[in-house]
Image (cartoon, rainbow, N blue to C red):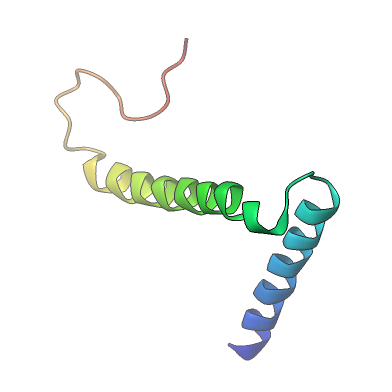
Length: 69
């Protein structure tokens, strides 16, 4: 578990360093994009769980998932 935590921590720090190097954001402005990404990841996870639960329970009217336009 400790090894996995170290890998995650290293990936997070690397991502933060890349964000600082490749953006014109001030240190106090990082929370906006970072929290947005965290929310999107959370929403994707919740959607995946709901999709697994609902598969097979539908009435055949419309499939769950991204629309193909």
